[in-house]
Length: 308
Image (tube, rainbow, N blue to C red; front, side, top):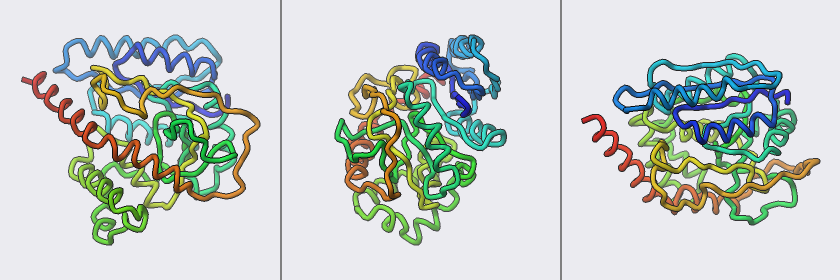
């Protein structure tokens, strides 16, 4: 595979191993690895980080491995954003996987072909692996276009990432001009994203980086490519997870994968699938709002206990 792959790892050797095996099947010629450092107040985390990084040493195909390992803990937001800034200072495009997102092998070819096809089309900002439509086919083509940028297995270009801003400095102007209303129309969706972006603006270096990516894409009026079948399974629920620490059921986590059929059937238009986006909003960004809040609160409480 010609397209560089970026692998974001931290302290979970078990899930990292599974994603590594998927990358190993794809055999990219260039592998960028971003790793955060351990937290000093978390017992045993340094050993977990070391065990996770050791997996990367087992690359056994013709591949240049380029590492960006932090000796200190930067946190999820700073580590991912600074790491991707570094990647895009080296390459024009990349496929990105985190250590708990196991892709179907067809995702690599799917991404590579579409990165080439839409390389210079600024109407498209990202290519996603995730599909949360619960098996409902939204199009007769291989993919559709969405306003949502799923980041559990994705790919993008430097031209799109250059608009990323961790601190979303534009938020105050967007809020003052009520621009979310123009983007989202639905008052409930507007309310959700207003609260979300305000929370990010108030604490931009917290534990999230992907809401800032959604914000950047919306500010450019760009769309995401969503496969007509789900191409990734997130297995990151558990005590070591950053966002989802419990075994509580989330309908958009650990969805079984399917294989993309080739040759790809490209839609002859670039228009957002409104019906699909309504389902996505209700599934990921509405129905689980309270659950996600509880997860974040639980994480903060656990962190306080460890610190004491």
